[in-house]
Length: 55
Image (cartoon, rainbow, N blue to C red; front, side, top):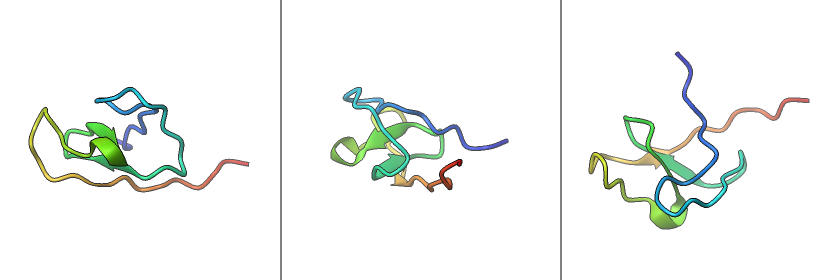
């Protein structure tokens, strides 16, 4: 099952693109760099991996 690449920060609603610095937790909660604290699980956030741009 592939990682869901969510397009918005779950805290502030900011739009996220592939090139942005984005953080996720083990539940795939997704946050921009400014909001990188998960209120849902309090777990460890890691930088979301990037996928190659599709041509």
